[in-house]
Image 1 (tube, rainbow, N blue to C red):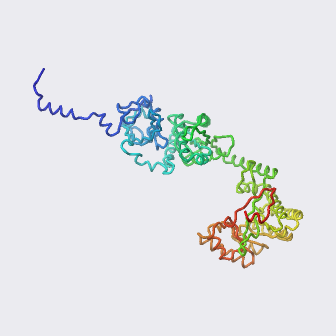
Image 2: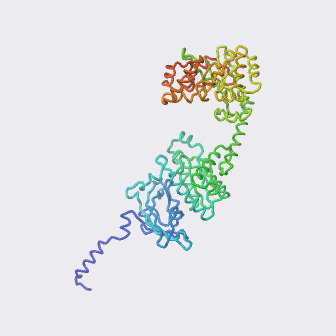
Image 3: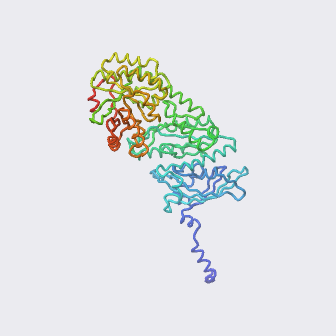
Length: 581
């Protein structure tokens, strides 16, 4: 045994070695772990401190696929996307990358885990084909360093929805299109939406809705290929980018996704909840040549899928919109015919208030069509279709019949009824009105027929002839939507009008638009010059009503004075009942 003391130089070396930190300790101190990813075999070799940094056993993330499953739903990108879909090429020195994303690592306790944000910096090297073959990198746990979100997160995400921003997703789609063209292949873009999420939020609360969305995203990611991308798109929708996917594969993928979602309910704090989805997809670049077209066509397909009773997936095709419009038109035609046959057409009465008395002077009869389930169909959906067919004349006649029946039951009731241009210019329309009035004696003097200025100027000579015939029956005539024709003075001089109704589009912004105020004042002065009473439509607030009163408008109509009240077809009602309503 040598008891001699160490030389001074040896003592210094020993002191240095004693204080030299272990490389693993250095990595742990900065929350970092190194890795190597062999792309061909998909094997990842982790540094010895992976469990300390990430909180997960390295064996459970020994492949790229296993690691990819941990990707959080709100991640702006992934290592796979950055490496495999990048635009740079390896010229010999490798290609660097630096990205941030989130990981959802479920602890052994099984509790819900927060997102761990990481920074992934490295370099990939190409194989003989020029594609990424080997990746060296370092992952830093940003959350452990006190950084809850990666730098730049706000630029990539929508602040309200935490969804991948449209710009970032558009960039990815653009790269996909370029790659597909270069390889002469195709990919698919699929939009998925949860049915009736607003109703679920209202019943269980938005937190439960968020849980359902998160669980759905995790289930989708767990079943998709590693080469595919699943992200939140907006609101209740997810977007999926499916690589190397043609039409047949897209249809098969949609069927598989529907089964995956429907196979079991989703666990939430409100209990297990089922989930139904709708999907719309497009194959690119075949049916969409740029990112904007990809989004637009997929959204169109998704919208159409929501309108179909049985089909939960619709693939976009160039003729899709036209064919769907034809189907919707035929559906509306059938709906109108069935409603007429089943007597599901009724009217709603809206009061028209006299400025002088503050009481209803008359009521306008407005069409209401109820579906078999009781839902009221909007007139905006009915008339565009009805006016292209003979159905509009049948609807107009039914409304007039109902109005006259109510007037017969209530001798004090005055009613105005709006007629379409096709009806007014019908060959025998005046004779038809005369026949109906004979069935309801005493109603002609209390009836006002309305038609639009646009209808009148289509054939002003024919309109003047019709007005003459109607007034000969004792019926008054009103011009609706006055001002829309832009030749109002000349039109008024040629037509024997009893009442003018100023287009509500000019009334609704009256207090905010100087142009509208000038135009409305001009129309009022014009009508007063010709001694024609004026009705202001769409009066929705007190300020507008006060302004119109100051201008001496004769009558008011709008929700501020009373909304339209529907009366069942078999309930004729009275003017007093409608006024009270």
